Image (cartoon, rainbow, N blue to C red; front, top):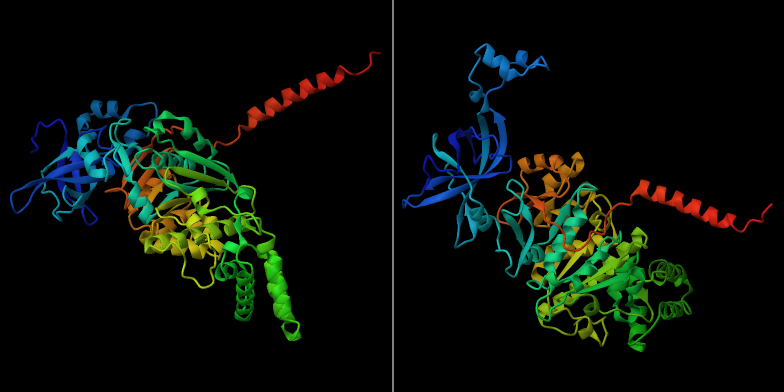
Length: 549
């Protein structure tokens, strides 16, 4: 298969490497054999069948170095010195020792890499992997096919020569984490993923929790022909926090109890009884005040209950009645925000962090419950506390995908939050019920490690902070040490993709977005200069009204 004069030949195997499934080879190639590049060697199995064994370049060092004394004079070229004293042929300085990690040969039937567990023998030719082979081996789904999301191209090759796509089914069923330092392009990258999910080939049902008002530009998809196919047009629903309301009468006692902090078991029992009594009396509509009135009735013949009842009422005021998401009258059904071919961007930038957590908790809890009902084939819940007669308006009989920007706010590493429990439940059980989550964070070190470990596909961009790197190392199985070492050196728009949704970890350049990016930082100097000019104009206008002396 491989001949010595093959133009893809880059070197020959030297021997085993320091780590398991690594080997070393020698190359004179100065340009093509970069860190992160893919090469292969030919392996012949017991049936005399030849396989191309794919390998990743993980380290590169010059084989010979100039002596220090030749480098001590900045004005003199060490190559000229070496030539003058006949130190060595200058071409001998251009050999490199390469460490390569064995990935395996691709099984077309199983669609996986199989490691032959046999490194190449010394002297075996090492060849540069062909672009067409890489596209077929790395991408789980071919471009333009349903389920594919083309998010960039291989970093080590020319632009667009080896496009890279991930499997949308996998990121919905096993979740996605997008991790990057501030300014590295994580929101831009998420925008690319969302564009792919809303293409006609995928038609996703997506909800984005947007704490920074960065995703409103996705509205451009509605009028962009690149997203259209026949009668299909993606629908983009831009909502603010005061557009989202859950009617109290649609909730059950357990949901309400879950929203109140530090309820004793005694408090929970009285609140459950009062809530269910009021709901049976007024199933279509009731208020928090109705619940408090019912609780007050328990104290009429038992004054000792007053402290307990007062504690419940205080919590109802603090955690329920004062929050705009819980309403006595207004209600938004889940089908209004989650529907195939529709993406809803919920801007929560005006809310305090605690209220953002409350909003996410209520929505995620209801989404998960409705997906469980749909998978079980139930249109009405069997929960005896739940008497809502309009369940079909909330029933989600299709998988959904939820993007959580600032994921560390909703699942903090060293503290509890309202949303952390339901998020852990979705991440551990969402695969069975079709609730996918994308966690986005610029501080992976502040993200709960159990939560991060449940995201089985990762898009990781520049990460410098050692604490963030450690949490990724400890939580993400698909990311090896050599990939962690790459993270500080990545530039804006470069990323590592690893995990379930791609066949092997790769370094990529994120593709250009079709819609505008909404997360750009303000231009400080430009705004200052503009402000000063406007101020002069205003002063000039004001001076026109002054009386002439």
